[in-house]
Length: 290
Image 1 (cartoon, rainbow, N blue to C red):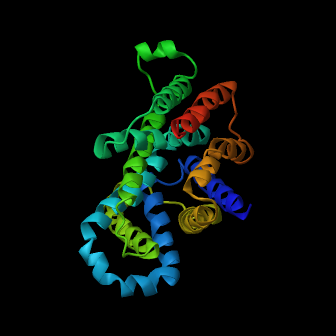
Image 2: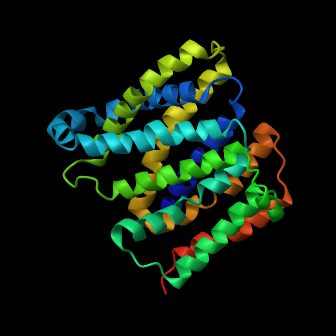
């Protein structure tokens, strides 16, 4: 049972990240928020990873192109897109759309690895796409004729695709490199890639008004959503395996909806449940065997 609790804890923390992205959409820009998040995460991970990072510095240099790409996608781009999405859509929509990334993984695995797409996968993809369309059109599929998606929904779909590519790349993690070294090096490199954009953002955007709430939010996403959730998730995979842990991840829309209701005052509408009735069974079906 501890494995399921670890997975649920990580999922709940990540759901809180969507709520924070939505709550801070007017007080801090997405680029600055992403930069501060990963700066905090990079500092927080060093006490745990520094010894291995120093011992494996030759491996970091050897596999630098791989680390660069994974950092650019998983650290620099993905979460920045999430925060941009939070400016024009709800946290419930963000969490619903985010769980479509396994479908992108199925498609990419077919394209690049020749993995067979079974009838289950085809049916699952169809269900998930239907659920997303119902969500982004607010149940009015006829609006597809005029294509008027909310900008945040489209950005969140792009973020889900980015995370899928990042997840595919993790299959190629150098076996001789420890997971702590990979994580720390991508955190640090991701911050370095964000730094020029952070400087540009600070020169053009309004001054950030520092307050206790903002500081707590940045500490939350930097220490909990980046480091603690990572540790919990890996503990869960160690105890119950990746497939069962992934099933727990699909509870995120429910957790996100509860957080958004109590913290942000967002309403939960019947259209969200209709969307869930298609998305979650679709993902479960797509991941089944025969």
